[in-house]
Image (cartoon, rainbow, N blue to C red; front, side):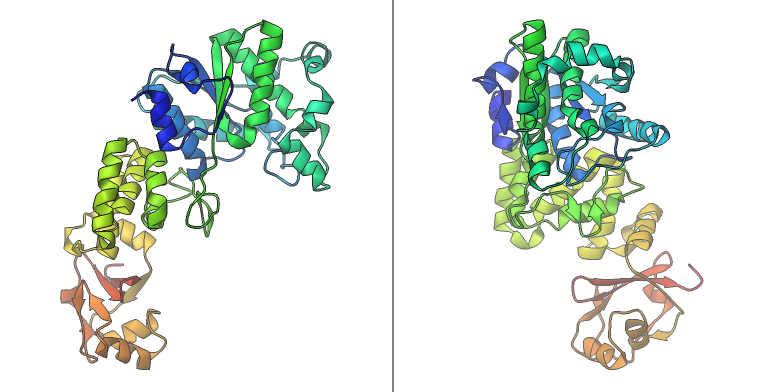
Length: 419
C-alpha cells in the first residue's frame, strides 16, 4: 500500500496543493516542516494528531523540520480566537520552547528531526527591508479574505496590525526553510490552509520554484458528540505528565464511545490497518470487554510516556474497573491508585455501613445498609451482604483495600497506620 493510500484510509488527509497527493508524498523523499507556537508549556492530545501524521511521513523517509515559533509566538496567530491572545514574556516562551521540543523528539522516536526556532531569523529582519522585499508580495485584499481574519472582522472583534502580519511571517518562515534546507512541503491543521498557501505562493513568486506544496489534515471530531476531540471536562489533555497524569490520559481514551474507536485507533496509534480491523472485529464480537478502548488507551500512553508507565496505568485501571487483583500490583501501581482514585482512611474494625456513609458512597447509614443487603457492595471484588460486616486487617493488601458500589463507584481504603 502506498503512503498516500494509507494516510487517506487513516483519515489524515484534508487538503493539498497541486493535482495529486501521490506526487507530493509517494515520489522522491522531501524535507517538510510543521510549525508550533509555544503558547503553552506542553502539546495537547489535540496537537498529537498532526504529530502522528509527522511520524508516518518521517517513518516513510521524509525529513521533518520542527519550527518552534519563538518569534511568531511573540505575536500570536489570530486563528481560532475571538480576541487577541495575551503576549508572553521571553522567559515563558523559552521554557515553553524547551518543553515542546523535548516532547516532539520523543514522539518521533529515533527519527532524525531538525528543530529550529524562527526567532533566530525573524529577530534579524529590518522593518524597511521586510516591508519592501516581502510585504509587497501580499495584498490587503487577499489577507482580509482569509478565514482566520474574516471571522474576527465579521464578529466585530478588532484585529491588530501585529496579528494581521502573522500570515506574512509564516510565509517568510517557509521561504527561509526552502532556502536553508530545501524544504518543499508544509503540513498543518485545516484551519491554517490559507496561511500555508500564502507561503507556497510566496516561494513560487520569489524563487521561481513550482514544486512547493501544502498539506493539511482535518480537525479530529468525535463522531459520538460532534465536538472537537482532545478535551476533558477539566479542559485540555496535556502530554506533559505533570499537567495531565498518564492515568487520566489512559482513562480518557478508555472511556471513548464505541463509534469513535475506529477513527481514533487509525489516528492515534501506529497499529497497522489490518491489526486495527482485526481488533475492531473482536470488539464487535465482545462489546462488554471494551477491547478497542483498552488497546487505544494503552497504545496512546505507551506512545507518549513509554511502555513501563503504560503497563502501570493499565494494571491500576484493571484493578479499579476490571478483574485484576489488588495483590498483584507493584508499589508504583499502588501509588497510582492512591493518587488517582478517591481515598478514605479507615481504622481496622470500622463498620462497613460507616465506611460507606462517611466515605461518600452512600447518603447516610440507611442507604448504606440497603446497598449491602441488595448485594451492591464489594470489597476487593468479593460481594459483602452482611450489614453488620466490618472492614478488618485481613481485607488489606500492602495497606490498601478496594471498596466498590456497583461497577463504577470506587473508594480506595487506606489503613490508618499505612497512610
